[in-house]
Image (cartoon, rainbow, N blue to C red; front, top):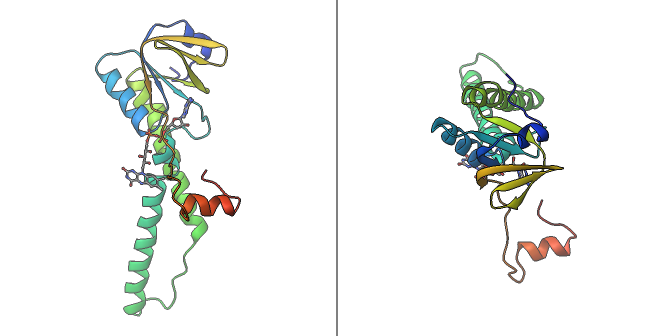
Length: 176
Ligand SMILES: Cc1cc2nc3c(=O)[nH]c(=O)nc-3n(C[C@H](O)[C@H](O)[C@H](O)COP(=O)(O)OP(=O)(O)OC[C@H]3O[C@@H](n4cnc5c(N)ncnc54)[C@H](O)[C@@H]3O)c2cc1C
């Protein structure tokens, strides 16, 4: 049974909970609500990178790269000191492949194991709140008893004179 539904299919269901955003907050809330027996729809605008910041560009990739770099450093230092090798070359491309593979595994684990096992459905598209109990995605209006907005956040730097924001603006740059 596929986890993905179309906008039309989503319109035909009365959802207990519609969650906007499949990041850490949205995915965890969706799973917990489904475990408590609610009928849950999870909407994500980024089809290529569901899972939000943590999985794709935050906690997971940074820790994987740090873990590999740390092991490379410790192991190569030890082996060189023991005279077992004279040189240990780091394959940075392989490191990034390992990082990408871990991300894919986590996304697949959620999409093919966790969400289906709790009956959670996913709809891909940009969601807009149409009313307190309905969400618009494209032409579809999806009704829900509850809507959770879990769309993440962006940094906001206060306008401090000489601060980072001003420096970026002067340099013709901006956040994200
Ligand atoms: C480099 C880095 C390292 C980090 N390391 C750690 C760590 O080690 N430990 C830790 O606890 N935290 C860490 N964080 C912080 C952590 O990643 C965030 O706190 C967490 O991802 C926030 O989750 P979220 O669900 O609130 O938002 P997000 O993960 O940003 O998810 C929001 C989702 O909503 C979707 N979305 C937005 N608008 C719409 C819309 N209109 N319709 C449909 N979908 C929409 C987005 O596409 C996205 O998938 C790190 C962050 C960074 C940047």
